[in-house]
Image 1 (tube, rainbow, N blue to C red):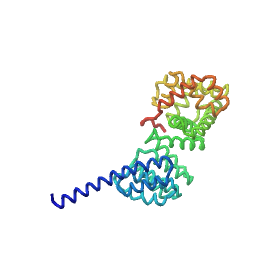
Image 2: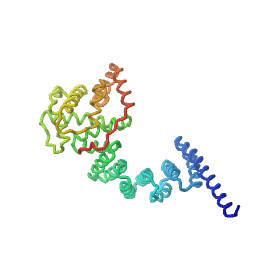
Image 3: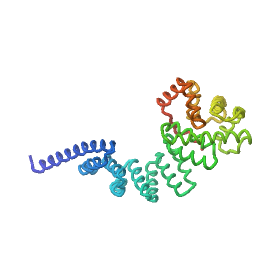
Image 4: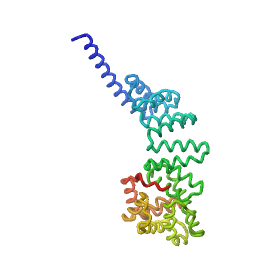
Amino acid sequence: MTKSICLLLLMAACFGADAQDAKRLHEIGKNYLVDGDYANAESMLYSAYTADTNDISIIKDLTLCYFFEKDYARGIALMTPLIDRQQADDQCFQILGSLYRTQNNYASSMAIYTAAIKKYPDNGAFYNEIGELMQLNNDPQCIAFWERGIEKDPPYPSNYFNACKFYHASGDKIWAALYGEIYVNIDPLNARTVEIKDILLEDYTYMLTALVNEGMPKEKNKFAQKVFTTFNRQADVVKMGISTATLTMLRTRFILDWYQDKTDRFPCALFEYHQQLLRLGLFDAYNQWLFGSAENLSGFQFWTQLHNLEYGSFVKYQRSNVFSVPKGQYYH
């Protein structure tokens, strides 16, 4: 066997050992990271990185460890060269942008997310981040990025959350209500749903009161026009007052009317979900979940005790059926 062949075999063996060591150390480091033991996580992950400096997954986890340790400068130094590599994925941009944002370096964070959108134009997280950075500067154009994120990546929740709050504050109640309800269904277990449920009850009350007292609003958007027109046909229901019970009645009639009306077809995942809940006999429980606690927490708790089986069936259905919005249902 020639000397050159022996050398090649020795190098291959060493490389294989390093790769195996890196993988083993990486797994140990990830376990420490999950447990919140950042000191040991850093030690293991740095050793893994030393053994294999080209493994992107190791670099990402080590950078995350630096993030959790608030060692932002080291995280930025490690991640910055990586995003110029062809193999860099969307998480690399997300991590680096978050590191800069945590340092209040909003210009660099904005540059990272802008570059990320060019590479990943269908990733809703980047539109959301840019919108939030613009909002920090009180730039009203932030809503354009949240809207774009909703259009490009409809299953991603945070754009709905921020758009709902924006429209609630600006007085555009119909879009606040639509986006808010979509948000709480995509992300029902998030603590932010409590805030959005309060907004939903407030905006439905405002919107329907205005509809009864002032008539149809001037609305150019055809989808919103149809929503208002359909609500207007049921408006007598809320003349007795707006509560979870009357909202349930109105929204039930709304869905029946919406699918009876054959004009201006607008496929809508939210309304299809309502229709499915009606068929299953769970729409009352859903509306209690949506509005009840915001209207009167003790009253909501009493209702769930009185309708224990019905509410339990809804919760079980909600947890086993993930709500999502497909592409092609963007109407704003």
